[in-house]
Image (cartoon, rainbow, N blue to C red; front, top):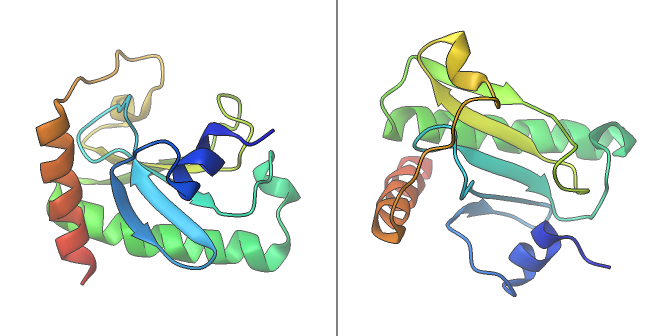
Length: 131
């Protein structure tokens, strides 16, 4: 059975897409810790990030680096925090979270709420920085 992320990649579930190539996909987290919180995933459905082939794992991180730099330019923050938790969806993914302190990367914190228009605006600002 396809994961929610595979359904997002296929377009069966809408998302605020940031970037995509033939192997990887990045989109805004709809339950973000902060504005610009982005998920980066391989298109190949793999549950555990450390089960990815070495080349795929390295490629995922390089793709995430490119996206993180764009998020950092588009969203005011000190830096981009990165987390791999791997329990909430059985599809490998990296969280890229704009942070100003270590507490900003705590998944125990309440999630932020944004309107659809705010998500669209954030996604567009990040995509502009990718070019």
